Image (cartoon, rainbow, N blue to C red):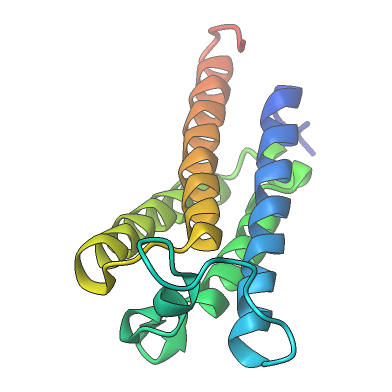
Length: 157
């Protein structure tokens, strides 16, 4: 059995922290979507209007609430960024993690467009997910670049 790849501690820690923040935020948004006992802690009315965003037609993709899709996104990200997955030399794991991060950013671009140009309101909780997803993408790309460099004989940073 071959040993796993050495992964910089900051890659493991950063991806884990981002996934935890994303899971927490997406779980909160999912909870507020399906219950009336927990209300969104956000202003209503004006440019910042979480309720307008989270109840808009754009808050569904193929009939599934975006909050649920976000929760699923971060659950899969947690699996793809677990330490054994980061250490894996299997190309499938590496490409899946990168593809997942790219898919997340593409979805975020659509959701930001929808907020700005279709819904005409911004949700701060959604914005947190957007920032986390974009930062997660950067960490995954940097982590993979460092690991690719270390496997080609170039020292990892």
